[in-house]
Each structure stands twice: as C-alpha cells, then as structure tokens.
Image (cartoon, rainbow, N blue to C red):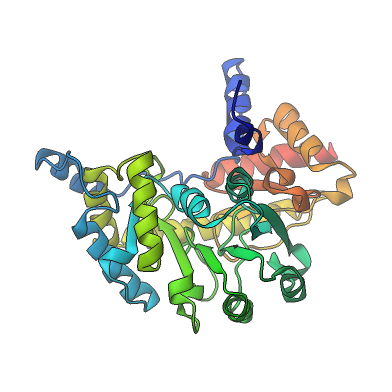
Length: 385
C-alpha cells in the first residue's frame, strides 16, 4: 500500500514516550517529565510583542521561499557578529524549525548509496533522513571515554571518496558533549581531502557552560562546504514557533530554496519578523536561562552519581545528561520503562539515539529544580529501596 521508502523512515521517540507518560497521567499518576528536549521557559516578551505587531502590520502573506529579505539580512549580521562569518542573503535559508535543514539538504545532496557519516548516539532524525534518501548511514561512535566526542582514528578510517556528507552536532543531543578545536580541525582537513559536505548542527550553540562555541565553518576551506544549522527553538524558548535558519554556499542554497517551494513554500512571515527581534533584541533572558540550566545540570549530575548503578559525566552544553546504567545489570529500554512505570519519571532509552546508546539513558533537565530533585528522589528509592 505504501511506498517502499516509508519503511526506511524513522521517528523521534521522545514524543512516543511523552504519549505514554500522558496516558499514565490520565490514569491519575503523577509523572515528572524529563523526556522532552524543550525549554520550560516562556518565549521572552519582546519576541512575542514583535510577532503580534507584525500580524497587525499585515505581515501575514506569502514571501520568498528562502525567507524574507529583512530576516535573511538579520541572520547575516548575526553570523558575522557571533561566528565571525560573512554571508550574503542569497546564502541564507529560513525554515519551519531546524529539521528541514537536516532533511532537505540530505535529499538534495545524497544519492542512492552515497555514504553519510553521522554521530551515534545522536539525534535520530539524522539516520532517518539518510536512510529515507537511500544513502548509506555510517555511524561514528561518540564515546563516554572521550567525554562524548569521537575517536579521530575511527573517522579517518570511515571517511573515503564515497563519503558525501559528515554530520556533526556540538553541543550535542543526547549527551551534552562538545567537540574541541582539535576535533573540528581534523574534520575540516578530512572534508577538504575527501571533497565532502559537513552539516554542522549548532542549535545548542548558546547553551554552553564551559569555553566558547566554535563552528567548523571558520576553518580553512570549510565555509562553502559547510551547511551551518541553527534555530530559535532552544535559545529563545521558541519550540512551537518553528523557525530555523542555515547558511551555506549559494549553489546549495538555490537547490534548498527550490525544495522549500515544493514542500512548504516558506517559513511563517510574522514568525520570521519575531525571529529578527530574537536575534537583535535584548539577550538578558537567554543569559538567565543558561545560568538556570547550569544550576540544574549540576544538581542532576550530582544526584545521579549518588544513585547505585548510575554514573554520569558533567556535560559542557545543551540541557541533557546521559548517565551510564550498565552497573544496574539492565538494558537501556528496560530501565527506562521501569523508571517510568514504577517511579513515575519519564526519560529515554539511550538506544533511541542509535545502537551505541545501549548502556545509557537520557534525561532532559529542562524542568524545574524542584521537579528534578523529586525525580532523583524517586529513582533513588526505586533503585535502592
């Protein structure tokens, strides 16, 4: 009945776990939600006001597929100020959220059998999009022993003339790991040597606790072979607004815009106007949010390390922890189900993020400190009671 390609399409398991948790809540259970990667803050007032003003100003009509010119110009200014990269508006694409910047470039660039190297454990949409396009998904292990970075030797062994694309994500979902300068430098060298594109997912670029964010697009030979993905969702608590943006070569941007036209026309007009205000308006709420996330990070890491069978690194970015649970003697999915059903805490199995996630589970600490402490108390009681 359905096209064969649908059998190759994956999903994002967090929403499935959320549905299970909601079902338990409907039965009267109290559930602490640590499964969804969504800031628990409201979108800042100045951004909301900008959207309302844009609606009343008539910013409700069709626009260019690549995005409205004022929005693209604002992103050019932002990348120059924040990343030291100069782009022109014809190199900028705006999309309804960040996922199209994963899915559509893979459709545009990856032919059947082309190899794409991607992080594992990693955001599940990477592998899903590669498989759907008919590419060969080549996992690159991000290991706990390397603070959830990869082994350069493994990348050197896997990259080859058939590699069409390398996907990187830093700070990373699900581990909170951050790639170092030496990692990015070697990826850049290998990308140039093997003439491949790098899709750099930087949606957590502002949620970083140690050091400064680096983008591979600044390394020699990389600006035109990097698709630099960012979005408003995490930084500005705008998940429901659906606004992502990317910078790339003019040649790739032209094809990307054509896909936009065929799939969804363009990102919502008044949301793009609100996005300008997000980038160029006051940033104090972002600073406050990151400070709160850091406090929560320390609380959940310390709490997990105090639970028998758990061992948790302190992530350098994003708002996730990825504790090792092998000492419990249980598989990842088994313990995630147990924690939900018996302790009333929703989390995700590490295998939701790829086969190399076995032995881990993921918690999002985008929840209040009170709820995080309650979740830790419940899990500790479950595992040691």
